[in-house]
Image (cartoon, rainbow, N blue to C red; front, side, top):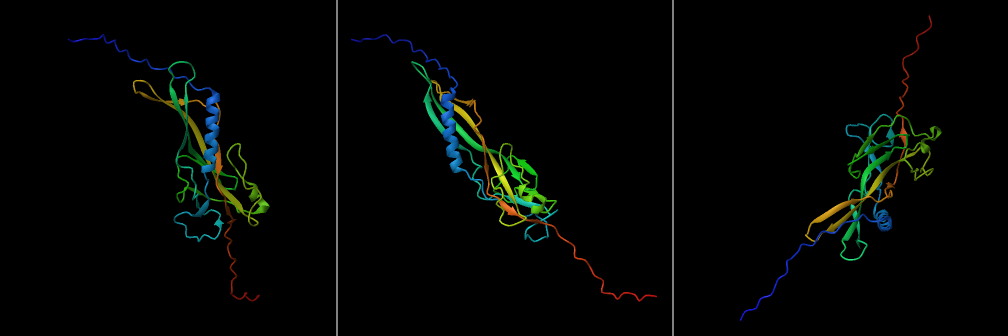
Length: 234
């Protein structure tokens, strides 16, 4: 004898709606990520050498001679990620969303200590000659060389009035760290989604390097004194 049973129709499970997280969810994640990033990042130590082709030995810097700068030891190039898993609010079936905050360097700002600056994107500042600069005046305290800084907007010189000797000025590179927030989730059919999330707050910040204190000098000509006798008066 055989028996049979009725098999009900299998209906697909409808996808769940994703709702952008409220600020109460986003703010703690960004605050935690920023604190961890600031502990892990280092701006490096600025160093320099004369640009390729220069015949001048480097014992201090000289006006009108191009100089290469870079920042060995900087640890800001690789992206860092921090996550928070949270279910969507509400009764019944809900999506479980993984919010990932990514922090990475998107800009560098060089402050050369002579009232000028330059910005870069996509440049590894740890590599030799990451940027080239030419000085056009000496670094004399009488000219205010220890106060001619141009840091990024909203920032201030982190090493004011700490020159190791008179007539020095500091070169600092600032690393801009950008935060982005992405929501990752998977629907019941296996489809994966990555949705950018507007954080509603600016969590970006700057990381300064340790400075290189430089003394910019001028090559002075040596007067030539003719050894010839003075012609006798007529």
